[in-house]
Amino acid sequence: MSFLFSQNAILLSLTARIVSFSNRTIRKMSQTRFSSKTQIPTSNHKKNPGDESCNGGSAANIRVFVRKKRAKKSLEISPKEEVKAEEPRQQQLCSPPDIEDFAYGKKCGYSYSTQAPENWEKVLEGIRRMRSSEDAPVDSMGCEKAGNSLPPKERRFAVLVSSLLSSQTKDHVTHGKFKCAVQRLLQNGLLNPDALDNTEEATIKNLIYPVGFYTRKASNLKKIAKICQLKYDGDIPSTLEDLLQLPGIGPKMAHLVMNVGWEIVLGICVDTHVHRICNRLGWVSRPGTKQKTSSPEETRESLQLWLPKEEWVAINPLLVGFGQTICTPLRPHCGTCTVSNFCPSAFKEISSPSSTPKKPRSN
DNA sequence: GTCCAGACAA
DNA sequence: TTGTCAGGAC
Image 1: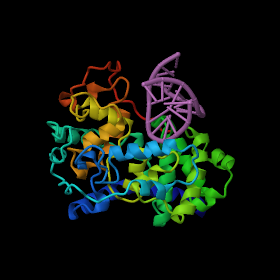
Image 2 (image 1 turned 90 degrees about the vertical axis):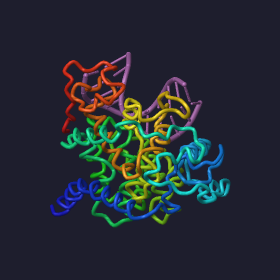
Image 3 (image 1 turned 120 degrees about the vertical axis):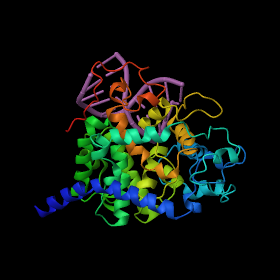
Image 4 (image 1 turned 30 degrees about the vertical axis):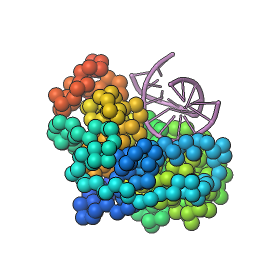
């Protein structure tokens, strides 16, 4: 009984996590200049095309790692050293950017627009107000809430596992299933790499069912556990590039885990909601054009050039929740959106007849 | 039948 | 770039 209570307590205590984390991050960022490890990792650091030297997380860098990852036919232990040997890094060819320096990209000769869009602060504030009720699925789930009461190493692994399980799910339908899956792993003592590594894939699959793509996720979880055991002493990788080497971890997840697991802000975690909303608002564009960005990675690169770093962590849950309830992919509820007057895309897509925001299901 | 969400393979 | 993955809502 007390065991079950403690499990529930862990899950319940997760809610406070993101608030304290965001506050800590903002405090930390306002107190310190960027160390080499927390460089803003955008391509605006490049002095010329092909110069990957400035940071560990530019979109170009990520594309290189993703290509390498895809080139691997086997998903076994990642060739971390090999990758690093191929691409020796020099630190910081460009000077570190100021948080306020929106023109930083221009300084480095990059062609993305570095102009902060007009009224972006009013829009963000308006979205914050719309989101104040915290009724979006993202407010009650999310990997940042995982393993809050665990020791740091286990908490980081829990964050990684939760990220993997929660991704690629239709949130308002499946977030209950996701939470149950994490809880089942926890209750079976499987929220650590050692146990997970020694558990049959079929068992993991049964425990995480019915989260989306459970078969592939079970397989990836086991591989990740093995890699963490063998290469990172039971911890998770601490750099963006090493995280990207893990099976099933792409740019979005890697940034999320760096932000939440390691509390190191290397970039904005851009998922489909952030990507869609930033484009609808006209906040991002393809380099040298006014066209919409074509991928979340391109959105991240463009957004990072002007959005102050204080907002980098908070913008994801803010826009994800907004995208889940009001600025939905299909039939956005422009009628109830209080910032539609600032949105160039408002009322241009077919709105739902009622124009009322979709309430997330509470399953 | 279409959509969703992110990684991956072809 | 496109299809696949899982399965429920619409």
